Length: 511
Image 1 (tube, rainbow, N blue to C red):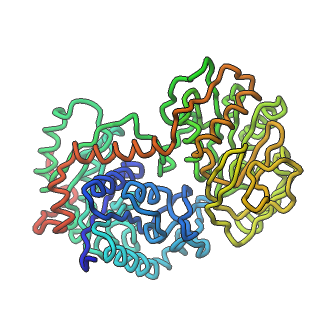
Image 2 (cartoon, rainbow, N blue to C red; image 1 turned 60 degrees about the vertical axis):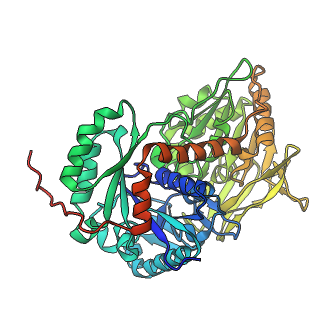
Image 3 (tube, rainbow, N blue to C red; image 1 turned 180 degrees about the vertical axis):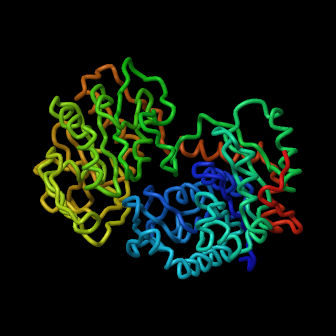
């Protein structure tokens, strides 16, 4: 094992600039070279998470990066996870387990302690792996947060990490984003910013050449490459900005049979593990759409109520927007409704929540059950049988079914107990990841098609969700290999930030 491990930090000009994707791509590229690689995100703010084999919770992006690296997910890959329950407070998860709630101001008081946790964890990983690819959070130029930062330049300074800044050219203004990000940093932070990457470019690369040259003159730093826009990359989105309201999920393939299945997913304000529906979207002939208003439900064949970090508040939002009534009318017509985790809890008669919202509310009443929240979070990677097919999934929830529905369970557990419910056209489960089980997914969609009268729909026997994910990870590795200056990246990894990088002052550039 090495005593001094090579690492770098991928920062971004904005949220959804491509940090998670580039970090995963670097992990895949290095793993293909035979290196043992670990991903690392000191602090992640996301309601998309998974459960590791040890029973801890981490951000989904770090689990995907671990897949790219070819290693098992580890709670140390994401030592601090913030799960927003409102605009003002988040659940704090440290090394996989809940460590209380915090507001933005109260969380700041914990930063010194958490920085010690973060740097100690990173040091452990450096002693065990050939490379550690770190991912920042948001933007390093959020100067209002810099004094207490543990995820971007605060981490880079503490661990002496070279920093790559990635910018999204598809949104426009990428040169201003890259220059401005550097210029807003203080001199010691600027000294670690070692280069740039441009992401999501469409068109002829030659068109960028003058801008790349000017950016290097202005900053003294190289653009290490331009990653092209790829229609094929859509799985495992990390940022909530990726879940566009009234937008189709993924790239729907033409149906195998004569008819499509249309799936509507209410885009809840505190949606969690929205990636559950990506497995449905992987099936040919299935069009999955996030929706925010009732008319989009009217012509859907299946409505999926997804997970939520704030079940009571999001149920209130469903009622305020009219979506709750649309879902009830959909179910009353005999059309299928599915609830996952928080969405499953909403389907019951009553929700008693003295953990997150401090409220007791009526549910939608589509399943005869009550749910009560427990202070202890359920975390697990269960297995069982659903619709006669072997299935695996993962659980992350405080809500417990206290009065089980008088309905057939959706999943049968190895000990004979049941999980979830299957009652006529209404189904529900606390399990995430259930639709990544190919045979179950096809059988479930076949059942949906029958209930919805889509007799011309046919499932594809050739679709493998695991293979689709593997293909995308290989594509990420190819994108690094073919589009980035890999020699320059290896120099950064092996030798750190170059010495003598010039500083840039705000307002110093003349027109």
